[in-house]
Length: 463
Image (cartoon, rainbow, N blue to C red):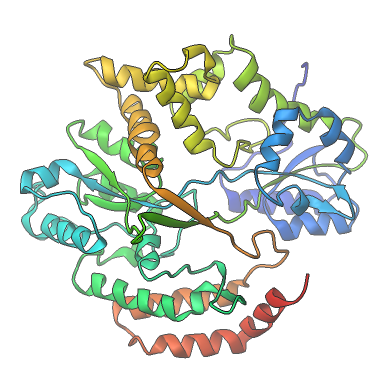
């Protein structure tokens, strides 16, 4: 395509990137093509007439498959359409299903424990890990469930405890419909109060890591890698991060996923993930806005689906390289890409489809899975590919996953940081016992009086 990009600036983390991005815009030195990682900043750039209209480029230079991918997310393109014009290209957040409970199966086998069918079963298994120390850590050295102090997760991190909230039909930090059909913030419902009572009991009983509030993400991962803990809630891709590091250090470890809780009808509820706040914009006046569409089409359509000779990207995927490690730093795939990919791989493994029917990503994972099944020496990357793409996703395929829409999925406003901090502080105090469960009612009153009432009214106002 003869596109040669030059980086205007490089940074090592998102916080520094945001500062550099804002400085570049303020100095009118921002690049021709730029990643924006904030919807509010995107709107500010549009209001100040700084970005190009991408409507024609999207309609004429995006491949039909890329356009189809975006249509698989209801409302996504509309979310970047202002006054009838497409002003940015958004990232797609693939639907990952519910969190799974990952347990050390080798520890369970050593203790003669059966697979959990309920969260109460899981609690007893984790208690047995702590008390009987099957990992040989020493007295009082084996920890319980690894947990993130943010409690509620997103699809880019593990260690959240969403399933414990879901046990009580609680969905914190999501806008949901109540029994009357009105929109309400999930963190202030009575279902969430009931969930906090359950989580407090797990913490009180020592099932949750007692120091979870002090753990960073890296520190939490080290508990898994070192074998100090054998339990965490994580997405289907948890074998790729953090479990792969545990397998590299201890290849005899056996991690197995379990899907809990399951409703009485056998279904599992999951909310459509929060919309990504990542967008690609083009500087107004740049002569080639179509470059963005051509790069996206090349990477996520032609290279994946049409050019069977491409090997470089296939190697990246087989070696567990982040799929966003591309010039645009965005992922673009179908909303159901997780289950779609596994179904295609299984079809080839079962002999019902030819291998050349797989796209580039699927071929990479298929090769990993085949190596894992057929070779005596099993690299950790092959174990991660098989355990995530086959073991975990087959578990998701075995249940009816009910995706519950968030009414304000593409809302132009979010819950302010001060209210988010109020929520986190109240929840943590209740969980560790610094405040009684009745403090939840105080938090709800304070939340509404500090701006939550106005937010709720806006949420329910006619659109």
